[in-house]
Image (cartoon, rainbow, N blue to C red):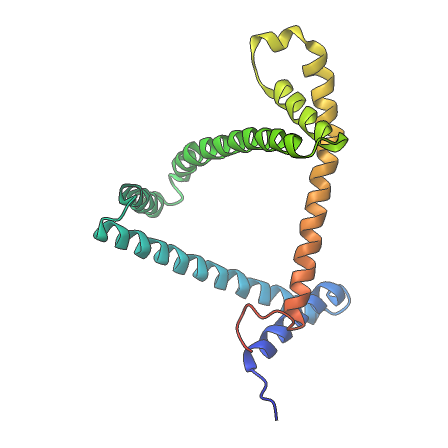
Length: 211
C-alpha cells in the first residue's frame, strides 16, 4: 500500500480552503473569514521566512569576509549597510519614519534608475545583434521602436528642435504599443502564476516537499 505524505495533504487542503473562500466567500461568511485568517498566517510565515533569508545572507557574507575570498570588500559593505539600516529602523521607530523612508529611497531609487538605464541599453544592443542574425521585418520594427522611445525619453537640448518626436510620437508609443505589450506580459505572468498555483494545489508539483 502506497503511503501518503501528510505535508502535501495539508498544503492541498489549505489551498482549496483559500480558493473556496475567494469563490464562495460572498455567500458563505465562514469560508471568507477562514480565507482571511489563513492569508494572515501565510503573511506571518512569509515574514519569518524573510528573516531566515536575511540571516542566511548575513552568514554567507560573513563567511566570505572571514575567509578573505574574492569580493569580500563588497560583502563587508553589504553587511555594514544591512546592520546600519536595521539599527536606524529600530531606533527611529514611528517618530522618525520619514527620515528612514528618505534614506531608503535615496539608495533604492538611484539603483532602480541605473538598472533601467542598463536594461534599455542592453535591449538596444540585443536588438542590433538580433538584426545581424535575423533580418526580418519584426526585428527592424523592434529596433526602430526602441531607438525612437529612447530618443523621445532623453532630455537633451536638440530634442526640443523635434517637437513632433517628444510631443506626439513618444506619448503615442507609450499609450498604445508599449502599454499593450506591457499588459500582454502581465497577462502572461498572471496565467503562468495561475497554472503554477494549480499544479501545486493538485500536487503535480511539490515545492513544499513530499514524494
